[in-house]
Amino acid sequence: MGNVRDILKSKDNPLVTVSPYITVFEALEKMVEKNIGALLVTENEKLTGILTERDYARKVILQGKTSKETRVNEVMTQNLITVSPDNTLEDCMQYMTNKFIRHLPVVENDKLIGIVSIGDVVKYIINEQRYIIEHLEHYIKGR
Image (tube, rainbow, N blue to C red; front, side):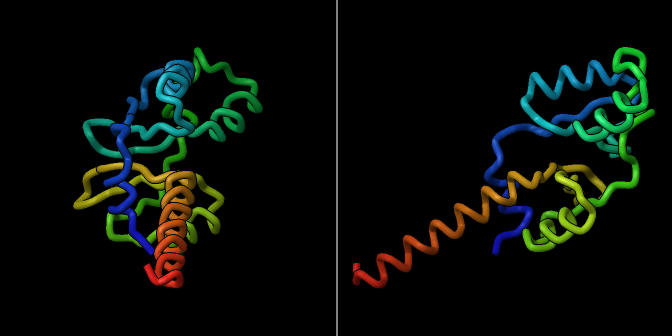
């Protein structure tokens, strides 16, 4: 099974971050523009949190707040679980399943270098299994 580094190599979209002081509305606009479900929040190049669609639903809408008046730092998730590029995909699946999260920031030497989503992990595993199956079929057929 692969590791986080393998996923980061295969991703072609750049890391998208936002300031903790922009409005949730501005953050949502960026999510729509980039077609993503989470934004990493940084201040002075330091990871301070993550804002997800789930945060928006639970901490803004259901709390009666407005996205145009609420700042990201008021509703972002701050106690983050991060992974390193050397973590296995099995590690990622376990963290995501046990903690009910869909995104893992990737940190190396105290520097934010990427993000891995549950979709990234599933896509990688499916492609890896497809390769193994094709390889076994060729082996069985003697080619």
